[in-house]
Image (cartoon, rainbow, N blue to C red; front, side, top):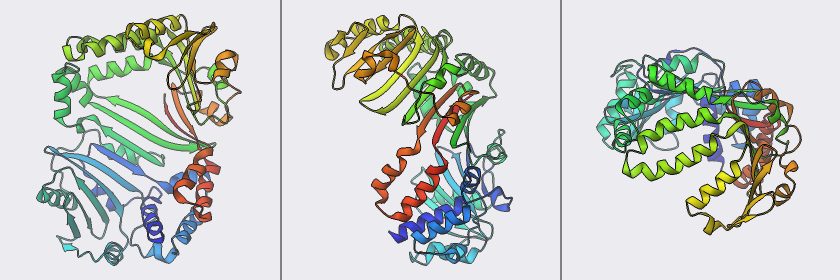
Length: 459
């Protein structure tokens, strides 16, 4: 267990960082189509945790001290970078960390494993089939190759250590985007990294045209993490260079409005998971119809397209907020603003021969479904609801609870979508894996005392 904890300390040392400069960053390939930065020290700073104490506590759990950390040969003040790129038909993924003492760094990876490093041009390396790593005076570079060709793995690593860009440099400069912000974690993904064979399969099924593929290939998706007021938020963004892709993104933004104040009264502090969004159903249906027009022409996809078309017709009647709270399979609720949706859902289930299996029953204020787990759905004014809580179904006014904590409501005010997880249950689940070790429980509590919610959002 202590060896495992010390390994954890090594990993944390890689990411225990601040935004410092260094030549080691140049080992992130310029033709990367995926770049991520992980800055744990930045997270601890943003949430107000003493970084030195946190690291010392982690080392104590592993039976180590600060001197052991210094002897790693890895700079604990430098971020770690993760990258992904194409190499012919292969995908190459890797990680880059800053080296402060090459000899110590080499010993970290060899002294307890009897690994014999090979010598390259100014660096030492280990070639282990699909994975490999190299160390020089500046950087530790670890790579993983989708190819089983050992020569290809070694060739990829050598090219990176020589700082050679085998393909054209990515014009989106993902590294600059990931590195050039104050986020404690950033990830940028160029969709052109997706192998041709996957796009070709979608094209063969009639789901995509050549024009669609060109549009998707121009898209870049981003995810940036920041923390304040007890909320750790990952903000999603998407951009594109292709005009058609830009048009699609603009339409998608129109399909979602900003979360309204009504949603602020939809969650309680005890809800484990939740979702809030504001939907323009007609705009959303138009987007779905554009995709369906391609799918319906293909016999293999026609039936699926028909079902999606019925679902989109129901979605088109939603005009306003959609909220979902989940605490357990016996206590979850989905609520949407829209009229006459219940009848459409009943007709949908009857049309698709689902009602016989689920035994629809009219309860007076809606319907219940007696399957393995009972569900209830119906109306409360203009609000359509689905719930597994029989008490809430009997009294729809109790579908949602008291106002959400201020930290969440503040975040929601300028977002179009927020998905959240409450961290209050995290120590209990962590104890299932970490056991009753007081040190581990203390570290977990240190984080969860500062972070009350983890959210994924879009604006």
